[in-house]
Amino acid sequence: MPTDAPEVPGTGVWAEVVGQPDARRVLFTAAEAARRQAAGEDVPPGAMTHAWLFTGPPGSGRSIAARALAAALECSDPQQVGCGRCNACRTVLQGTHADVKVVVPEGLSISVAEMRALVQASARRPSTGQWRVVLIEDSDRLTEGAANALLKAVEEPPPRTVFLLCAPSDHPEDVSVTIRSRCRVVQLRTPLTDAIAEVLRDRDGVDPQLAEWAASVCGGHIGRARRLATDEQARERRESVLRVPLGIGRFADVFTAAGGLVKLAETEAVTANEQRDEAEREELKTAMGAGGTGKGTAQATKGANAALKELEKRQKSRATRSQRDALDLALVDLAGFYRDVLITKTGSGAALNHPDFARSSAKAASEWTSESALRRLEAVLACRTALGQNVKPLIAVEAMLATLHTG
Image (cartoon, rainbow, N blue to C red; front, side, top):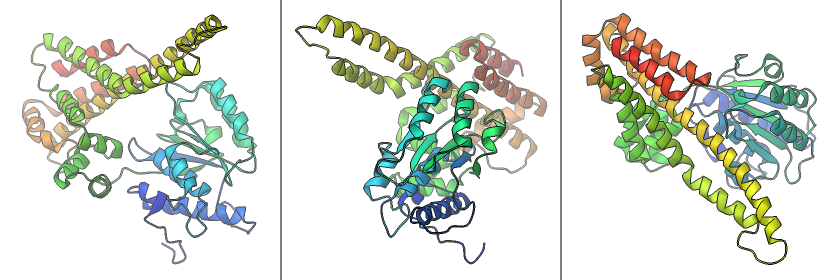
């Protein structure tokens, strides 16, 4: 590393970017250059750019890194870039800063209408900070029309606007080549187990032994590790999924297990959205004058009913996405199990995805051939592809489990 490389603080917003030293250095350098640029100083060309693309595997912290950069750009502390303590940093991290718009798709895609409204808002000058920031999580969910609308804004950005896009990769299937070519790409890696365990222990106050276990089985996903360490039901759901491979002894078990997996995903989706859905309904009813009396009440009630139907439509779309995400997570766990079987079978010595299920994977390795384990792994991956193509979940899972049974 060059001797003149800036020293990145391990505190403030940068402490949130776990296990990504190279990316953190790049982002800190850019935020520092942006501050000097805003002050009228000369900065090297390319030190700060108007469009960024954060890529990396699930759990690598794409959106966290993007939020850290957004907070550092708005930070009002004159002594530190991204202090994490000032009002600007706190409101950015909480998602309430007036100049930072965070788009988290609640449905299966981001529509062109939503993107056009966002592009229009991004053209305004910052109201309280130095920059207007547009952060789009899961930008791979942009429809073709939405991507085209965003491209126009990225091609000719306002002078004080920064676009931060997050996607699994810079592959054309995730982000169009035209948008990618106008972005500076920040590639994140899977955080190491020790780094995740340290965060759980020191920042979340998790018991050290539980933190070590959660970090070892989360697949490098920080958010998943936190859920497993703090939510007993999440641990139970994972165990239910990992009992499936050795639990389908008869063909009839295929249908029972398929229904169980889909039901598990539905339950997790309901649990994740139930409180939020109810709060949104009550807030809308209050805003539309529910319970009011007097002149105009009938018209207000009619308007409230229409707005409520629209809200229920959005909530249904969000529930569908949550269910697909929960089911996909279960499939990732299953794929990890079959990988463990192959590792055990070949004696490679690589780290297991599920070390706490080492006995089960060893039993499977002793009973199956390598070809059979590989066919099962391919069936899980094919199921993930089918779900991505909107195949009905129960049908896709039943087809997968039939292959898992026969091998």
